[in-house]
Length: 67
Image (tube, rainbow, N blue to C red; front, top):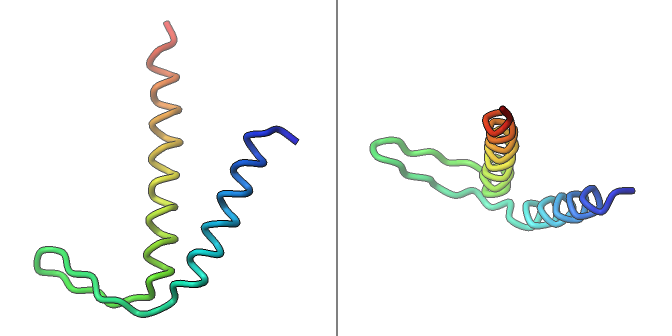
């Protein structure tokens, strides 16, 4: 197994444990919107969006740097 996959797997397990321990309902306010949802869903969505952005920026950077 590649060391990168091991690190990704360990980080994924830590995120799952962290989100499982933070299940309380919280209120999020942004400008004039108010949203109530589980803290674990917010954490999971934040990690998911960050991962997608990181991967897409990495792929975009590799394509742009090639001649």
